Length: 356
Image 1 (cartoon, one colour):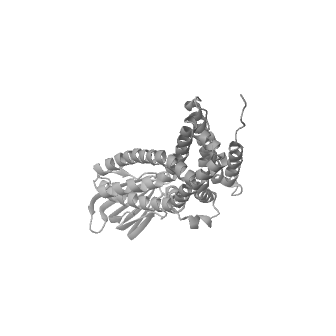
Image 2 (cartoon, rainbow, N blue to C red):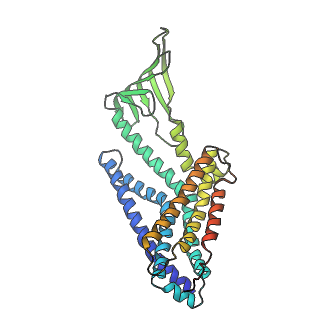
Image 3 (cartoon, rainbow, N blue to C red):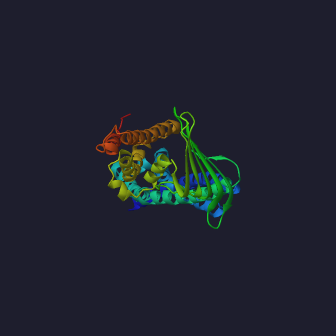
């Protein structure tokens, strides 16, 4: 127990300092971006601060295992350089006992990371998308009521309105045009007294409703024009791909487990494997921290960074292959972690003592 407390304390000191610094840097960057949007009137100040908190929670999924890896590397590396490890070994504390102490602390951090990945991160994505959608919808309403032609992003639509009824949430005196690309060069035009544009909620079909107006279909080449008067007319806006991305990140882990879609399988395996990645990185840091009193810290650091980048690159590539259907659910990401586990077994072998 004394060994466990001592090693845990040595690791937690740089862990808390490093994690706090990383969070501070990220919060500063995120706050600058969100507050800039708030200053431009694109969202309220309260929404900006809430988004900073939610984005920080999302980032903890990566910050926690990263901070733990480099904290173990720094703490045990210092103990090697100062000769403390040689004293512990002389007192009968084996390298496997050191590994066991690191494992106990890493299990706690891995459980926290797993909870964030499986539950906290999807919830944070849902809330952030909802807040961003509400802020964007309010900003777009003000922007589109300016009496100027406004092209709708990611579409062939152009919109203009004479005014805005804030109480009813309706545009007044609206005009919508869509130009079809292709050999027929058709155009659709809608002129209406009022219109209700949708909130940009993730996972929902976006539709705009127009009231009391006319619909025109103009065929520039065939001269076959159609005119229709309506009391209510609904137009589906083409934002399906963006919605699919939002839905996958914000979907509950339980719903992803029942899906057979490759992209959702990849997201599901990524969430479940995050605590395993945290453990593997932490345990790899133990043998990587071995050094002699006069050995260069820079070389050890470069090797550790290479291992860290290699682990995340391998899992990211496997995840992409699963999304593209190049790699099946089995072995999926689990095959990568099996290989990393074998690498870990090779690293944790105690070094051979050389006689002088």
